[in-house]
Amino acid sequence: MKKKIICTFLASLLAFGCPVSAFAAEITATAIPNSKNLEGWSDFSDGMCLIIQNRSKLGYINTAGKVVISPKYAYARDFSEGKAMVVIDGKVCYINKTGNVVISTGLNYDYDEYGWAYSGETEFKNGMACVYGPGGWGSINTAGKVVIPFQFDKPYFFNEKGLAQVFLNGDMNYIDTKGNLIFPAGYSSIGENKDGTWTGIRHDQLSHAGFLHSEYSSYDLLDAKGNIIKTNVKTSAGKNFDMIALAQATLDDYGLSKDRYLSISTPVDGIAKASLLYDVAVANYGGARNVYIDTKTCREIAGPFNLAEDFREGYALVSKNVTDGFVTYTKNGLINTKGQPVLPLEYETVNTKGLSEGHMLAKKNGTLYLIKSTGHKGGFTDVSSADYFYKPVKWAVEKGITSGVSDSSFAPNQTCTRGQIISFLWRAAGSPQPSISNPYSDVKSNDYFYKAALWAYEQGMAEDISFSPNAPCTRAMAVEFMWRYDGSPSYTAELPFYDVNTDADYAEAIAWAVDEGVTSGTSETTFSPDSTCTRGQIVTFLYRGFAG
Image 1: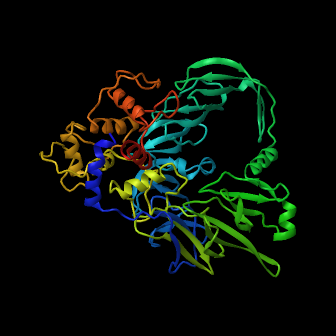
Image 2 (image 1 turned 30 degrees about the vertical axis):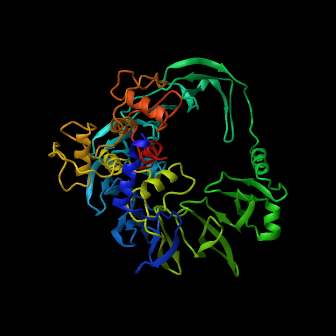
Image 3 (image 1 turned 90 degrees about the vertical axis):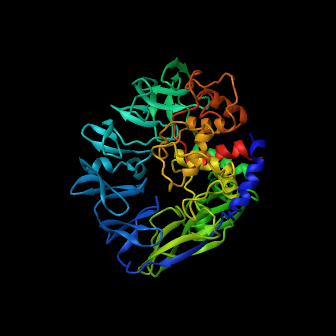
């Protein structure tokens, strides 16, 4: 397959050029007019950020620094898939980016229940959002229809495999996107193993549960369909993990002295955050304990800081305490992965943990500022060198297969649609001109995917009269499109995935994808064919299938 498109990629390069893909960027700060009473209140999400006025009413600002929805809500959540949850007259509603109500759930807002919910749990993901109603937590669709009944004890969200961890009558369980329970009742804890099996600990198997450790004498081994493989598997009980000892063992990995450091975090972008010993920090740095370590050289590159966040989008939010007489202030700024300050420690208020979608809000001297990561055209602030999709995204942009959703954002975690993946494949093929009339009922000549859809029909990749361009692309759809593009080669290899039937339409495509190294399973025994794909996952599939 890789040989097949070498020539078409050369054609793509000539047709589209090679956009400069710079993944590092500089930082600018722009004052927002008339912002004395405003503060940022969240991360940027879907191009919007919550703001709060006089610490009472919430509204939204966009990435241009314009207040597009005036502060008027007592309760509001982040935008996702073009919608945000707000409370109007005590009822849960969803608004669009112009502030118009698009879903009126009619459900009462319960402060205690929603106080336990993270913003992501009530956001729309793949057309569903988790909300609280009579009987507990459930899900609605974009029409406001209840698609998963209100019955669960706590809010939940679905992972990339289409599963959500839920609690029902004190038991932990998992549900699929239709609300079906996966495992039997009675488990206190359930977790997935690397081989695709699951470990379930029943309430009667748990002898002690604590903050740092749990004790249990046996557990059940289950498959991903919830069937018990083995019950009461014996294990050593009462093991207590020494967290300090574990941290010091990590220090040894980097050759860091235990006379200076207490612990070190998992590296991000090759940089790890380390904590100094209390006595060292007090004696030498006024109590500031957080430093950053370059894991290649095992040397400090920045700090100490009083507060330090992990790197996000190539930058880390840091702060130092400044004392003026008897008053101590916190000053915030940003550093890059070289440890260099790119936003000075001048900002008093930053209600976030760093940049998101290339932006954040910070306040200085009574004025709110839009902090923006800007740089070379084609650079993405939401793609870092530590991401598994870093090289695939860079490759796809350079080949003209795809671009970002904006100059600074690729949106790798955004759901990929059928229209998008067909467009990606069409561009990879050199953007050939289709020679047929439009066979689709739901494709118009001014759609961005128009030529791609017609080309796909010609190639036998999508032959129904309805193309469904906005439908989410699943893992099975993605590999089937690629397999058909490669000529639908015959594959009879036995698959290890219990969730792929041998007579499924996409079985050969999955066998092909595994053999070509396009993708493997989501575990050793599962492929998750119905799970939706993100933009980052799709370009990774294409990169593995076409690059080289």
